[in-house]
Length: 224
Image 1 (cartoon, one colour):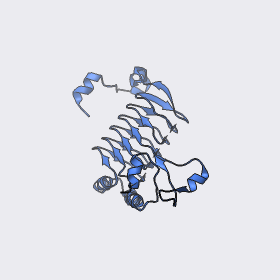
Image 2 (cartoon, helix red, strand yellow):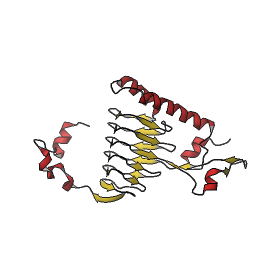
Image 3 (cartoon, one colour):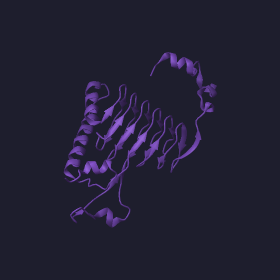
Image 4 (tube, one colour):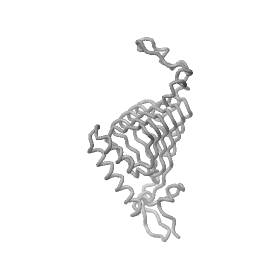
């Protein structure tokens, strides 16, 4: 039995994005995203139903501002209390996994497909029966819990970003970022590991009458 093109994606093999079954999945997602982008922010029930149909999973308390664009949709799984600002774009040929309590600024883009570098191979390759086909492959993206992405961040195929990271605005992330890192730039690189020196307690000029919780206070509140 021939291997389905979607199975090839998940196996990291070359696949045909023009395959009829894949095109049907993408068309469904594109149409549902278009419907979502026509809703108003207070149409919460309608938006919730559309997200349920579009995505492979979405945790409670999550909010996507819109407009938004998911290529396959069902290949993306998002955790609890996610916030996605304007113009979130996820080209989820391969699996995209986003953890709990992540916040994305405007114009965040996540891409998974990879195309041949040589132009003649990008245009045509030989399929299993020697027939000419357009092929590409895809690498999954994984984003941990408690991550904050600034505006215009681009996450490239195959990248894993650890828990608790901050990715600076305009960064293009081309390689893995370890947990609790502040990383920025093009290409994105780790600037430093986050520490108590980054606490808001060190910024009395903006605290006003507020303060960070202690670890013990936070655990007692059980807000998460």
